[in-house]
Length: 177
Length: 377
Image 1 (cartoon, each protein chain N blue to C red):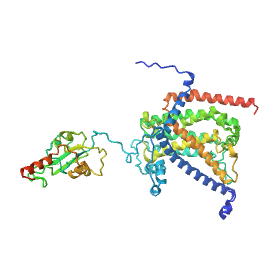
Image 2: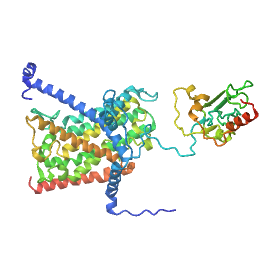
Image 3: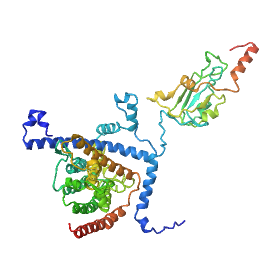
Image 4: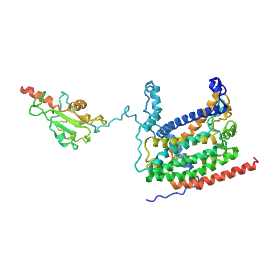
């Protein structure tokens, strides 16, 4: 495309119209509304579907939903997740009914917030939440353990409530965990 | 001050020469302190104005330990950024002063000082107030004030050229070369633009220039300021001042986009800060010069404020206040312009200087001289 360059008349060549235009624009913005957000005090509202930090959740019965299947550990592209399964002894609260992890660590410095762990989890036990500004004073501090992840994740409003049904079933059969 | 000897017997026993020396020292210390303060706060003004023009809020976080915890006042001062210059200054002192291996050391160390000194020397001849307790509020009441100013201003280019040369790398060198060409060109236009002013005034003493501007051009509406009598001279002087102080739209020596910061690329910490202070001190002195030459200096035509204060301390301080307010107004315009216009191309800058302003200034001299001759002055 060829842009035709108009010949400027004398008034325009004086540079003054451009000067006045500049004055007008800048003075309008000088007194105009400011767009700065005072960050730590004001925060933007995180839209639904935002992929923040991944945390573990509990169900309404206050049980850890994770069953140490290690699918998330396997799928995690930067290998940020490390799961220590309970082993043959089982977990003290749940016995060997469900394999709640002995330790669950996410290195938030490695995590790329891709959401694969959430996608792959068969138990809906890990979710990417709305936290986007994770800070710490050391690398060790940025490795979140199971306790911290569960505390941050909170309770998930679970539709299936697998544990509730299992408990009912166990009672029916006369075997309680 | 006439009642000064009563304060202390030592003061009463002083000879006129000693009194002069004492007053000079007091004035120099006061002026330099105010100038440095204004430099610091014009940097803040620059940041605030640029922020407002770009729909931001600017520095509003820095706070001061005790004052910051006063309710209302502390947060208010912090939101104005009052403490920011202190933090900036402290930072430049504490930063590592790095001297790159490839620089020419002597010039590298000299250049920042050479940039700053002329900027501070120029203030000496500017009358920043009428009188305070019988003392003239000017450090050096030179008969050839304006010649002194131009002499010192032309030294200003050396700092930048030396910095460019000392850095021993291509971008700073280009910046230095550009600046020498630019500043030499615009000095001519600047010098010529003020000749009509002195044709009218008939005296090179800046105090006399201010005396000439007392009164009205149109009663109660237009002061008898030379900006209204010599608008063309003022316009050329203003634009040349932009070029001389390396401010946008003529900041060829710095030219962040093309020259990576120009002549000061290799500088860090306090040496860089000195270039910065030099630039702002230059802005302030050129504003002060414009106020003196074209906007009546410390005078206001209303309520008899155009007469020297004599022994009246309040009026004397008011005159200094008026002068500083006018300077602040000019500083605001200079800062405002920086955030308004794009940089001129180098050839445009040169053609503007040599092919527009110098002929215009010459024509202005001729016309003014002819008019004065016809009017028989």
